[in-house]
Image (cartoon, rainbow, N blue to C red; front, side, top):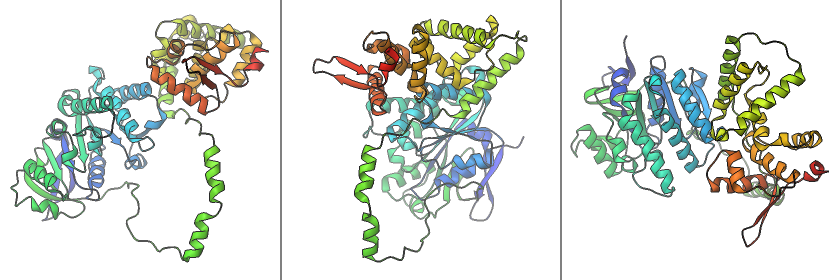
Length: 483
């Protein structure tokens, strides 16, 4: 099997090839200032090798999501998943050998870093039977493996450095081949850059970056001046997967395109200063007032990839099982409720990933002869939240009213919200943080405080805390439940 791909041509028009099989064993470092063509190079490399090897792209700017329009890449929106879902999804990606683009552009910088670190760590920790070869491309790698702490929290820096070091230093034995791209070598952690044996160096102007690039390419100081004069899309390559001697390569064309801003000049609007000033200030105060009082948008709906995959797995389980006897809808619902309540009562149940719980639920239903094919993943998540919060302890009328209150509550905060409602409805007062943490599936007090702030901002609860630290939570509409 031929594993060579063409990434471009040299100065004489001769194709420059990259041996993908060798690349898997020796890794790649790409460097170049903004506008030098790094993303174009990565896109060319990914497109040419798409049919040869699994590809996983960490994309902080959303530049590579267009790969899904031309190839079989799955776009994973990092902002749509919880931390545990990201980790579970990474395991499935390794298991099913799916090529994915982890798009992080909707997250803040530190959230991007934490999400990518958890994702990479889960890829690295996958079971041995899933250690298939895969190219792991990390764009803007100086963000995820910084040489200095910068403004990020220290625990975040340690987390991301550990993930990137594992990828570049120990990932080869697990089938993971790191391809890191950075604007500045000086900002990239040396223990990450040092593990790459292949280099593609683009245009750079700072002396410290030019010198480091020249050292990696085996060039003297005078030859290093060539790096400053490189044109956009031109790189100097060296390494066992590229060339045994430095070679200049002009990167070839690509099918998919990024979403970079337009670089060509466009005509300015034909308006004088007075008209433009009037346009800028028209209804400005009203718009600003609307934004101040506008409630925050609801959390995004659960993304389809994880749910569809979990539903497919449950469908296979139901297909392999013996045909179930027909049950009345009332008795089936009752049996499903008992299964959910048994699961929720187990220690540590809420700390398990939702997809794992869903598989366990399908297995228990099959063993007990309970019809569960009508329950998909989103429905299960809400039913399990009701069971975890103890809604079954209320009477029928109260349960109906609680269900009505919970209709517009997002899945990821439903369980703790219901726990607060149930506690108030039963006259037990405000639940303590330990109870909310157990229902929410976390051991972090800070996360519970952020949860309560989020619920209050969305208008679901009202929190009052006195100077002594005593917290009181009220729930709008609870009077109807208690009536």
